[in-house]
Length: 150
Image (cartoon, rainbow, N blue to C red; front, side):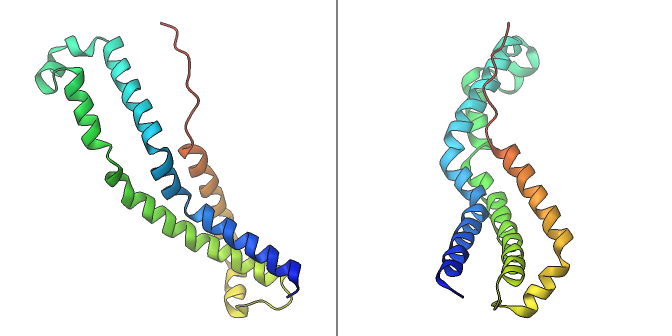
């Protein structure tokens, strides 16, 4: 493998590692921003629909402070850690398969020949994996704030 091939392999490896850790990065970097926006949105919706004046809400949670506390306990970072770790693990497996195929296809001297041949047969899996990854990434990114007309 020549110098440019090693550099390209390094770039692909680092990219795949960063993409694999995207769920954890989203959880720890953007959690607070998304949480504050969701909490504010829920409380605004409850106020706009005068939910705090309804008997059902008064009997269960009473006021905005109690609803805010309930949101705080439900939406802790620790509640999202296990799903983020599972996604990170499954993304890591998927990107390893993709790296094996890239190595097998484009490298004159592939590192894992037998694994590359197995990964060759897993192309439909990789297409599905990449589709799910892109869908999840699009769903995880925060939606733009919409102006409301009341």
